[in-house]
Length: 307
Image 1 (cartoon, rainbow, N blue to C red):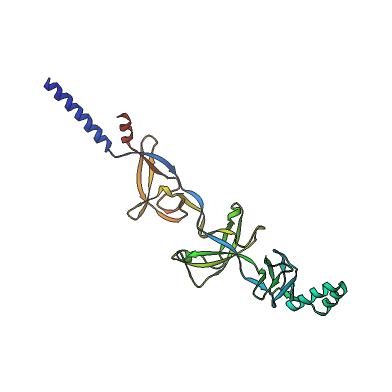
Image 2: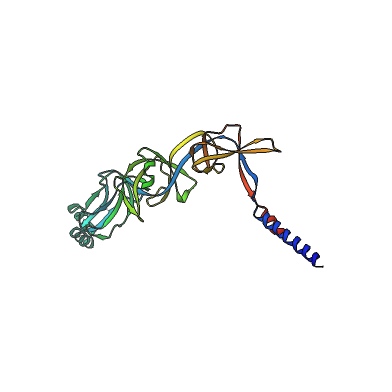
């Protein structure tokens, strides 16, 4: 009986040892994906949030204190330099006009001819982006009546680490966050010479002139800019997941042999341009060769299920 018990216990220990050993075996590798060199258009880019802003904005104020008689423009109106945009009466004229109006219509006309209102003209070519006051309101010299802009552009802040990737004259693709499916292009027209710290990050303001403004373009809108700093068409590439870093060397796993008995060999390759999704292969791989990436499937899970 003791011998029988000893044999049973020994067999049980042996089974447990086999299970433990199998749990720590190297994972079995199966091919997850295969690929060959294919021509791809690769773009290296980064995205930066910006804002629609006037290139130059001027608040229009009255040269005298008094009362606004007439505003001749509305928001969105284009105006030319020297064009009359509103009329203002001095405090004295406003008092005289009001007194004449109380007397008679003829007296009012007479005073209108004698004492005319003061015209205020546009200081530049542009358009009205804000109408702040209305006829009948009294104002002083510091009150803003209208706001003018010469043009609407896009302003973005570029991190100093990306500064080298952009220069004046570069084309930029953009979309308004409110209309994310409508793309438009612009050109970098100015890069600030002085930096600004924002949240402990050094940035430089970059001004971008849209080549064709969307109809809905408004000051203050949020814009996403897509800045492409390197590109190559028809670059012979493979998906980047097939490339591994092996002690500083870039390698791929090349498949050869037949489907029943495939062979796999690691090979060093030289890389070109990459957009993270796809990477150009400059040398080390032929167009007819197959590269693979493995899926590791451990037996541990199967053993645990059985247990």
